[in-house]
Image (cartoon, rainbow over all chains, first blue to last red; front, side):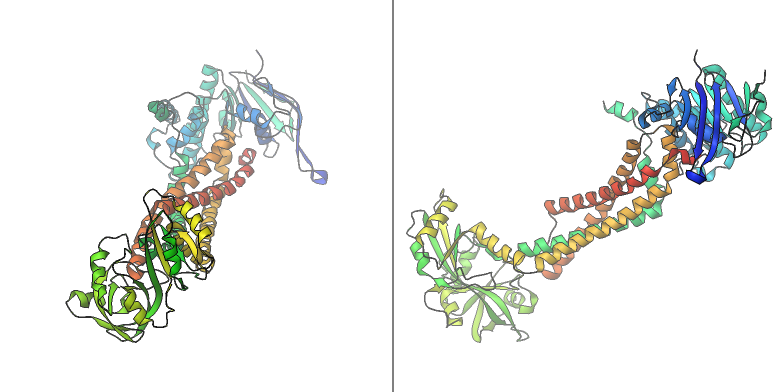
Length: 230
Length: 390
């Protein structure tokens, strides 16, 4: 079976001329279905850029990015957009819609699914909110939620869209160790039960043990220390 | 089918974006409603003016009208030979004629003694003048010399004539320095050109204006046989009559008067400009609201795009916001428009009222205003780069 994500010789830089700054240098990486890969490294080493490239949010400059077997280098806007619907994105700044309640925010994720009735999508949203331990906060606006709660709503939103690949940027950053652990177990369960690929950027040493594979990154390169936990 | 649509529904994002900021929404609606009221007033005045300028014209019981080519409007009617009207009788399709004298005369307010010009029509009391059948019995009262019928809808500046008359008093006053007595009341209505109206017999009229050239009239009414084609007769009369007279249909006569106010005075332009200004003010307000709304929510729109929502879907959200603003801004504008029209009617006796055309025109203007602003605000959405949210 082909890898869900396959990067080969990926390079990326920002700016131009003298200000040109190489952020990613010759990255090659694979994420298989059902696999949880953790990406660690000092801040500013290009982890987030890597996630946005895999998430089809950025145009690939050099090298090859295959997601679900599709080449993203040179892919059209429409093709990238279509791909994004299959990718769950958990963003650090969570970016919930301020005018929507927790439940409605999650339903914005569920609404991306075609052919489901309103009731089915709503039930799905509630289910995921329950899974992240927020069933008591369905009707609250982001304004009334704590940072950790917002983070969990954002995770529920990503999961409600039934992604085949999950990209998470510091998903446990604003969570206490217990909820952080719960969330990570949830993501791992998703990978194991539904064959979802998970690529997680994290600094959190408490959750490293869930990884099938740990990848270290430094100065835009994957360091030699990349190894499998097992 | 309906069930399917109901089950397919999504979160009403546009509605929630607007209503979760009630203060901003209220300001926006107030702005749109204000623009709408401005347009309602200006267009109402303009249309009211055009309608009011032909209050009398509409009343005539006639198919064709003869006027002098030198007449430019109801406030400056020139005379033409009455013979022309008699000549028109020769046409096989013409059934009856009514010669009418028409001028603005000075009426003295019987209470304050101040004078003011009033539109005076002189006709043969036995001839049909207005389509309203209640006039004929009153016209008989004009057969005595020095008698006039006073329009009770005239502005109050002409004096409490109607009250006095109803109270049983003998109301006498002066026109051009000659004594007249009010023999009855009629209800005609004021116009921009005339603040009040008087009807009198031809004989009295000529007494009031002794300098009128003999055999000269200002308006000639021509009634046609049933089934005659007015346009054909107009052509025939134009061909047969000399150039010192102008032949119009009743509609043409009304258009002649309206056209004067529309094109030969600045009034029509001023009110149209006023309405345009309301439109522009509204555009600025709605654009401000929608633009800042889109700017405020840019990261959120970017998030939606990162999740896989397509740009047209998001454009649709902004478009729906514009639509909602239009509808909810229009309703108070409509209600306020009705109220202000009532106010204007009571204060000026001008026939300013809501009609379907204007109600629709203003709604479409508001809709264009909101959708146009929404379209401009949407350009900002193109800036929403989903990669920026990380």
